[in-house]
Image 1: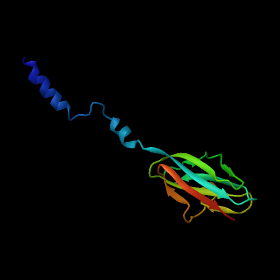
Image 2: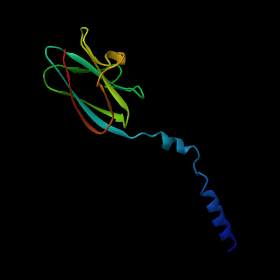
Image 3: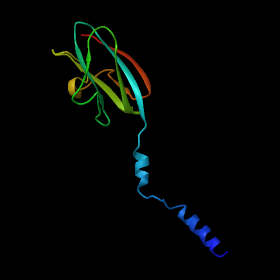
Image 4: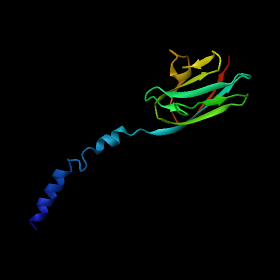
Length: 130
């Protein structure tokens, strides 16, 4: 019976010590990812190329070496998985000199209304006009 008070004291003492030190960094660094859809329309006959850029962690959708090709009158949907609260901007360009948003490669100095905060759901439709 003498071992019981000792065990109770040890359990109480260990309750304030993490059982797996170092694990808290993994729990703190996990982000919540959500699926966001953004639609884009262009005016024919232009063919427009588009990428989405994460401003906080430098993500690129669909990939750094790929792009969405927009042509025709139908809205083209870009469905991405992004970190909740991350700032996402679009960059679009033609084979000529036209560009929208942050431009090709996220290199344009700035833009007006070309960024949104990543959140679950549909962001609406952007019309890219010459």
